Length: 118
Image 1 (cartoon, rainbow, N blue to C red):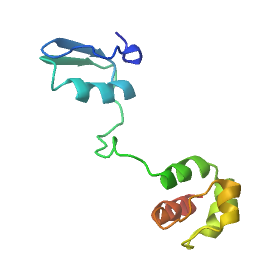
Image 2 (image 1 turned 90 degrees about the vertical axis):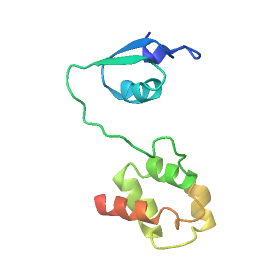
Image 3 (image 1 turned 180 degrees about the vertical axis):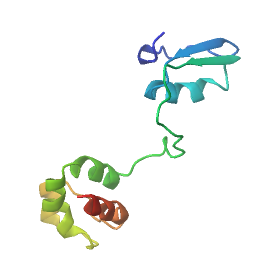
Image 4 (image 1 turned 135 degrees about the vertical axis):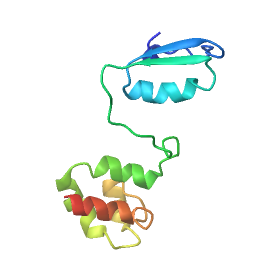
């Protein structure tokens, strides 16, 4: 079956599994099934440029989600966020207007990196 149509409850314990491809789906699938399967064979055309992310399954705070979504565009970052860098509390009117987190204390390192990149 294709990983996009994975049927919940599919049993791989003790089975031999072949995975075709090494893209993002395989990168998530193989480590999840390897401990249960008796054998996993991966077929790849060319190597991918990925590395393990030990934090992959950790939650992302609301403040960090806001940074990732709202500051993807450099002009929006300069207009909205840059003036707030260095402040601890975000003014209520800006929080409502731009759906900002109440404090940038938690995301200050991320904001500084974004400012440097724009």
